[in-house]
Amino acid sequence: MDDIRLAIVGYGGMGSLHGRYLLNTPIPGCRLAAVCDIRPERLEAAKKTFGDDMPTYASIDELIAAKAADAVLIATPHYAHPPLAIQAFDAGLHVLTEKPAGVYAKQVRDMNEAAARSGKVFGIMYNQRTRPIHCKIKELIDDGELGEIHRNLYVVTNWYRTQAYYDGGGWRATWEGEGGGVLINQCPHNLDIWQYVCGMPSRVTAKLGFGTYHDIEVEDDATAIVEYPNGATGVFITTTGEGAGSERWEIVGDRGTLLLENGKLTFRKTRQSVREHLATCPKGMESPEVWKCEIPHGKGGGHRAITENFVAAICDGKPLIAPGEEGIRGLQISNAMHLSAWLRQTVDLPVDEDLYWKKLQEKIAASITKKKAKGADTSMDFEGTF
Image 1 (cartoon, one colour):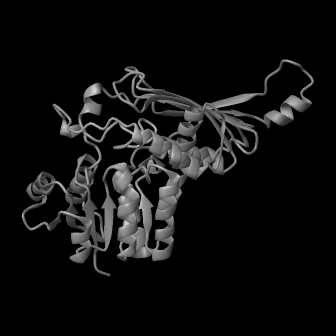
Image 2 (cartoon, rainbow, N blue to C red):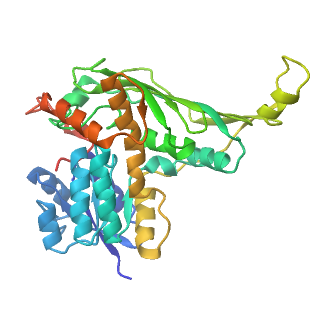
Image 3 (cartoon, one colour):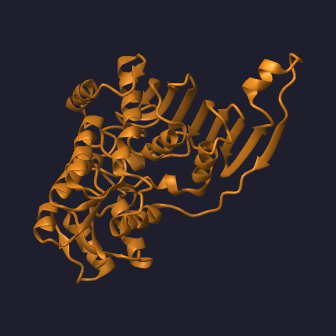
């Protein structure tokens, strides 16, 4: 089989990152065949990196018409992910999209349906699923070592961003340009790995801070309490405004507690089931015996691992680590958080997609889009403009 011809659509911060590892550490069975972006300076940058022989296109229409690719890696602003993916699927191309899958679930559902119609491979860049420490957590839970989950607390406040970051791109931090803040930009990875490990919640109650720390109209601070179908609870906390942020994930089950903190994974495992112990122990205040150990997890994973898996799925039929259709799950959670904050009430999942779309349109209508970013630092434009 000939090498898969992969085209990058959107050559901004993330698009160029993908381009660099494809250049420096090529993926077997794949070659970078084209770069596509509506901004001429981005295409010039691609030429400087890959040489004048690299085909470049000013639109996905041109790319498709040239029949220059078998697959596309979409790294554009959020709203463009679904329509570009749908266009690629309709043209018979495989698709790997950057996160988030889109801004609102109704739009992403259309993308998933297009993927199903096409029969092509559809992946999403949820590289946190390849992080060894996350793989180990999921393995322990799936193997039943933790027992049934009772509650979890996920604090991810190490997404610190300055005002310059938000001023660094005209589409950033507005409902019209980006569709949200920390939940839709930084946290799709965290929301995905949260549901990937702990499952989808059934209810969400959220308190969001819109422009709490920055001069922006979208959320830069979020706290949510969720309920799961089995009665378990979870708490998710994130922000881009804490200078001494951290990542801490505590998952409590019937057989102990898993704790991810400061890059270390600790398992405090009870010798017997907690439900069994509390029901049978004759002493009223005696805790069950606990064994504590630090779980080794190694290093590795990342963006390249997802792209490598995507290529293997096309060439060899290997199962996807992050199927694109699953992008709607984390998005459902963030949509529910927004809707809960806007309505000031608990929201059931699956989220009411029509209601969310209506409320988002109201926010967009009042959006103060930055027409020009003054003093923009383009190195911080982590998603390509398309």
